[in-house]
Length: 326
Image (cartoon, rainbow, N blue to C red; front, side, top):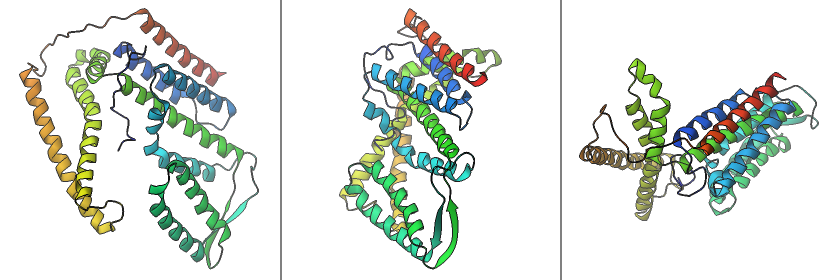
């Protein structure tokens, strides 16, 4: 639960915290476009482009004084996705030069039994390991190693061929996903919900011409982002309360886990509806009327540093486009 960083705000006085929310959102959109405009390829130029963007993002993170570890924690929930995508690319891409000699892999009775026993051992021991991500990578390596070493009572077999093009393509996709997650995390880390609401509403303002309820959409998006960490905290409290009453979410059987999840979801839904009602009452007391024109205490003014930020974002986008067409 603590690894999910989306929606969390970290107070600070860095230049990114003080940046106009409209500029932050607009610059984020430009950088995301630059990230996705780089073609998925196994060439060195896209890889170097993604690596350069990652270095810039890390420098940007350091300048905000937000702990790097806090930002990297946001990648933990997608470690499995990153690993699965990396492996798929190694199996799918069969062009280029072989990195290692072909390895004969066996799906056999002995390998399946050994993998099952190892996975049971992994689930029992991972809670005692400090560096769980490294332990997860080690487990993935062992699963493949067992297929190569235990061919007894073979059911089927395949040849594992690792090409340099597959490694480059897998690395490219890994870098792209990492860049996107860190960029979006920095937005919520440095922007309060009210500022984010204003930024979304300002960028969507042209849609009011065609009668799109921009203010309602912006409010819903900002409240959704705001209450993700709140509901996660409430869920964690409920889990600890149930654990203090003897509920074990890790060691129970599959059937017991289903009933435990149901007993967890029901109070979470009740709490979410209760908080929604309280929020609605609070907004109504403060004079919030859907569709009515509202005024703000603070009026945002575009400053010189805001212009510089947009210009730099556009320069990065232009550089990415240049590397694509060159």
